[in-house]
Image 1 (cartoon, rainbow, N blue to C red):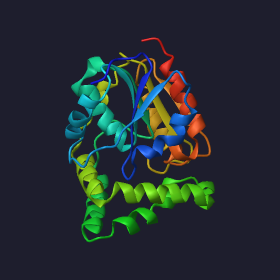
Image 2: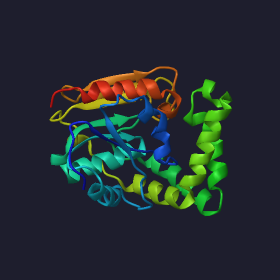
Image 3: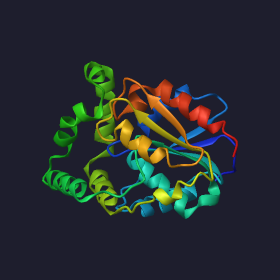
Image 4: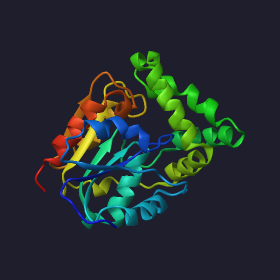
Length: 236
């Protein structure tokens, strides 16, 4: 555990993402923010991932989780609430999966267990990105490199962790600065879906990233960084 700073920001990535998903966000943050983007280890519960990461993090920090990273962030908040200055949920929700979502995830597990990881993830690009991003060759190459570095074994563990996670919406009680960020063209978590739970959080900040899909941190890093920096200026 490192010493604390009022401007320590921990960033937790999504499924199929390494810490590199936040590279451009980190570059766009103010110099006063000490950002640490981590990798999720191949552990098949979000609670286990949280427990593995917490000893490596500052004594007290601002915490932002992107999609699957939001599930891990909430597990960290539950385990060590005294260490979390504020929580930001980026393109994610605090609820458990329903039966249909679990069935879809189990189907994807079967495909990956049969050796189809890379083809499965490549086929999902149109669901993950804004249509304009799909023609950005550099961005697509960055994503491909990240997906290969992430790998099938982490995917299998993290999908199992996603299926098993509980509802942690009760933790979003407004006791610390809370940001809910949505992307205008996110097909995984629509703006309406995110605003419905956000509006129940006392004192919540909401940020809408326009012209972005689910991969908003890669597509619109400056806008994401601006929202995070504004949230970190909120008095405790």
